Length: 120
Image: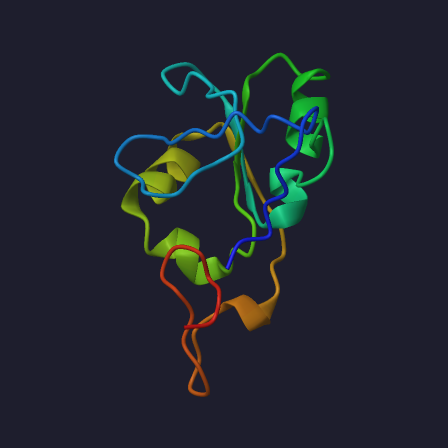
């Protein structure tokens, strides 16, 4: 199932990947070989349906690139299972973490997809 809306004149999220991660993030891709700020989170961080997500707005105010590591439907476990994303978060000058919903996490009642965090 996908919630992605494709139409003429719609938003171009410029999806990108970092390192060996299988997750797709909102681009454009930022340089991570220089000091940067990392933003981890779900749809709010990703900026679904909006032209300028808040990591982009912060980047315009600070003198550092801001890496948007937001992904729709993300739960905490999608990030802690991805070594590349954890490495990027650890290497950042500052890492901002969105408080994510618990319903996107595997628990004793149901399991979620390891990357998309939707129910399986």
